[in-house]
Image 1 (tube, rainbow, N blue to C red):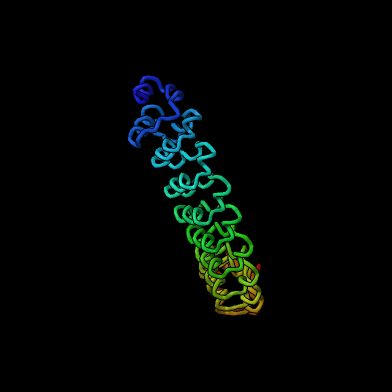
Image 2 (cartoon, rainbow, N blue to C red):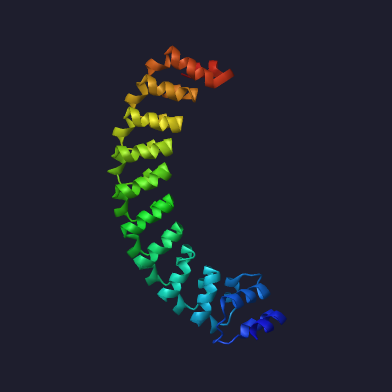
Length: 275
C-alpha cells in the first residue's frame, strides 16, 4: 500500500505509519520510486515516528549505513543498531551516541572497517593501544588524533612514519632519536630529517638515506656531514645549488664542482660564483 501510494505521490511517504516495517527489497523500491535510490534520503524524509522504528532503521542501514544519521537519537544510542551501521561503513561512527564512541569494541570494529572513523572516537577509545595501532595502520594521518601517551609508543610511530615520514614531527622526542624510526621516516620522505634528533642529523648513513629520497634534505644535515665528500657529492649530483651548503673545502673540490655544474646547465658559471 505504501509503495503504491509513493509511486503515485512521493509526498505520501511522510504519512507512513510508525509500525511500517518493510523488507529490504521494498525499502529499495521505495527509495528508487521517490528518492533516486538514495535510502538515506528516504529515511530523512520519513516521519519522526518511523525514524524511531528499529526494524525500519535497521533495514535502511543494511542498504545505506548513512541512514543512521537520520535515525531517532534513541537508535543512535542502540549498540546493535550502531554495529549494523559501522560494520558496513566505519565512518558513520560519527552519528553514534557519545557513549558508544567510547566503546572500545565498537570503535575498533569501526576503525578496522574504515580507519577514518578514529577521529570520531571519544577519549576513552583513543587511549586504547589496539585501536590506535589499527587506526594508524589503516591511515597514517590518524597519528595526529592520538593522545600524547601514544606518541611515545615506538611501534605505533613506526607504522605511521613508514607511510608518511613527515609524521616524525609528532613523535615524542625520545623517538626522534631512535635510529630505526628515523631511518624509516627519511626513507619515506627525506625532508623528515628536519625533525630528527641532532645526533641523527649528524649520522652519515641517515643523511645519505634522506638524500636518496630527496636531495634537499642536505639542508638539515649537521655541520660534520657537510664536510663529507660522499654525502655532498650525492646531493649535488641531483641539485648543484646544494654545493652552497657544503664545507668550504668541498666547494673547491673538482669532482663536486663538475657534478654540480652538470645539473645547472647554462647557469653553471653564475652558480660557481655563488659558491
